[in-house]
Length: 408
Length: 191
Image 1: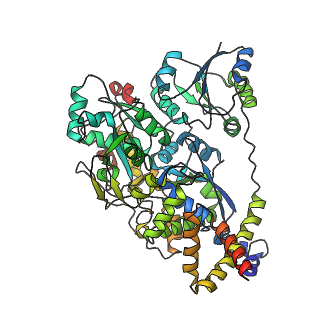
Image 2 (image 1 turned 60 degrees about the vertical axis):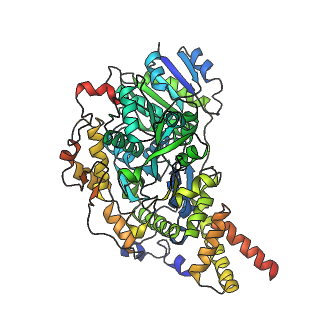
Image 3 (image 1 turned 30 degrees about the horizontal axis):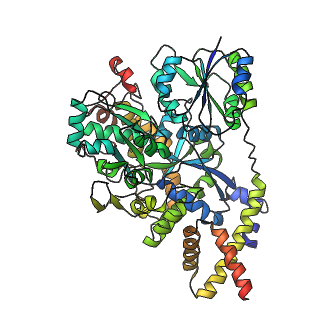
């Protein structure tokens, strides 16, 4: 303990000259939403992963994504568990805030969201994508689907999946926004016919016999990017050491969660606590362990379930991951023109900082900045031609005037 | 006269906000209950200003309204960018979010925000950075101490001791420091 005091910049005048790794800010306020995929942040903050770095992490649960965003931008939160698309929407100035330079410090998780339909549709036999396609195109009343944020990942998964089944998400159905913890109640009340959200809210709908899981998001894109550790660029510029050790602490927590099945179970128990998800353990634990029950009598162990680490594969903020969300914003008319996809991604994705943090822990980092994936419609996304990719879809709402009103 | 849509869907006491705004000469429409059909109601009421609790889950629904309205003649924005960012910061801190129709001058908005901010219960959670630092240092020492005791008791290495403590803490929805204190207390008892 004496050693660390002796090395602190205040006691050692040369520390400034030699460069100090001590965090510039000792106590951070971190925002999160009540979703199973906030786990690595909650474990890092409560289980002493940041303490050795001289960092205290204070968890701040948020009631909406918009609120989380505004507090990030205004500096009331230092960093947050964020939807990938939300960070890019703020950076590009889409939505209710002026454009602000943002940063993705690391990926927090992949996979583990799903699209669910109501019990009512199930009773009408709408239990397959084909039946849904028929229902949408033959029924006189429009179905209403909920997602969690206009530029969020759930909106993009929902749109992508519907379009891959021949359903235009902005014309053939209505799309509304509902905060995650309220999904099941709205489904039960018949105000929505289906939704796309993260866990435990999908498992909860199945458990309460209010709905069934029609498609997992990992079926849309195996090992897709999902939540990130987001902050403003100003925070990284002012606190580079803090940002680096924050990534380290969360990486260590991610590794810990996946070290054993026992650790995953304990994580589920922690998450069910009132201060975190405030949800029953039996809605959280199974899918956190990859055990799925779709509510139609099918059970399986999912090979691409929610994951936090996978030897760091989950956490590297690939440029192509960030760019994909911009291509979808473009596809659905949220962006009127092509942005400088690569330039913006290079600005937002903090690859160098992440690699420094991971190297310090002996976690292997890929030296590629892009990765290649095949999505549900057979298309390959590798980041090489974003503008062409955005324009390559049969169903879209590329901003031409007739499509503008279709946003709702 | 400016028309204000007041969305009231959180348990927080908005108090006499509505009366106060009416007394200040504004046309106030009070909305409570569910926000899912907010886009339709905004279209019907056509308010100039929408006031909503920052903590309201309905904030995400307002995002949709913002995006939809950007192609209409009167787009709704949240705190126009020419507006002082400090006002936004201050308003969010005190728990009020305002969405305004583009083109309304800042000086006309100010009295509304003043009234709203005074009425919303301000969140006074002040965090002292220094205090947190002291506490974190103290906690670190206690965790180290407990880890040492556990290594001796269980005859295990450092990493194993940490894992045991963390699993115990997590399965009880506690923090690591709480389990460390329990180990220290137990160890003192058994002496």
